[in-house]
Length: 455
Image (cartoon, rainbow, N blue to C red; front, side):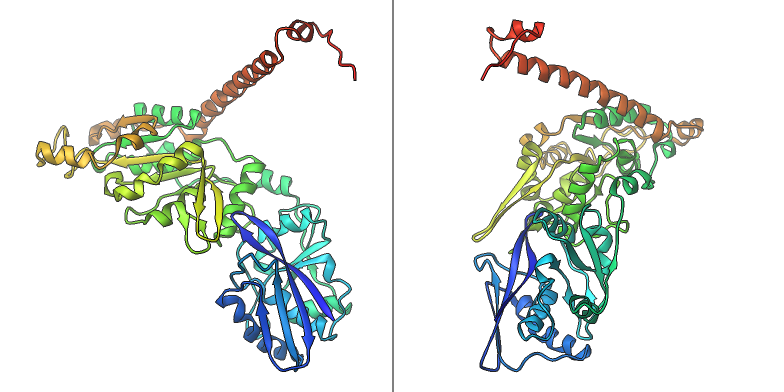
């Protein structure tokens, strides 16, 4: 008897179905095939211990488990639950009637508890796309999976609950959320606000322009001028995420193993990697390529502090993502594409000591040192940074004169107004382009509303 349970594998930020086909024959061993990695092969030991804890045992036969399709590499511990259920059903210890209606996802601990896994949101999206009735997930992944509407999300705390549910002797807890209502009521509080930035009115204006047009920005100024603080304020003046953007951003974080408390990311990401980061960590990669900092900042801000301190080969990998807004990572057996539509914000000192052209501090750098320091950033990368501004340091007297500063909420209103004007302009341009594409013979008739199509 061959029994199939349904799980999934990650390919980029999307999921592909994986069937755990299990057959029992005479013998006394467990074989897992279908291109599994070490973590998948270790699932048989976790399964045996978990089944003992719930009062059941693995049949003393030869059990062959095939993870199909066999040409897709299976990685991670997410297959523990579907493998355990398939073994029980193949041994006729539980009925197999419900197995075709639900996707099973979860890692098993030795005491039978179901532990969380990465990528649960893409799995739930796949389950709905396949027309399944629902998905069984660990409790920690439930809110993330419940973001997908029109799909039953069943919560499993341990293997015993799953066995009772499939046997018809119990029910699993269901979680339902109204995604649009949850997104509308989400609290959007920001760590920094432009109201805390005293003075720097020209610089604030530059940030508002950058936010309105989605422009990349670099700040040049001495230490203590407020570069990092203003960069952290940028998300507070950007337009709120749309529901589609929030779902896409949440998928990327889900694949990377980063779960939002509410299940849905409602704020634009702000990522600030250290200057010692590697190129793989920045753009993504690995044997099974995972998203890097550029993709984790998708629909948000990627902030690079002390830009010249980053290794040159690390900065150069940003050229293609900034241009194409996607990252394609190619490996010998796998190629994935991650979105990377970010606002790049960078800051740097004007020289190694940081006080070149400072009004009160004397610079100790030679002219050649200054040129060498600025030359660490290549011309092609600077070409992709739309705005370059100089941050002027303020004296104590200047900062104390500014008692009230404009808040981020006020600046965001101007940014949203500018975005609406752009949307209307591009909508008109798009309509004109479509009209021109029709050709001169149809254009006058369409304008007068007299053209009819006869089939």
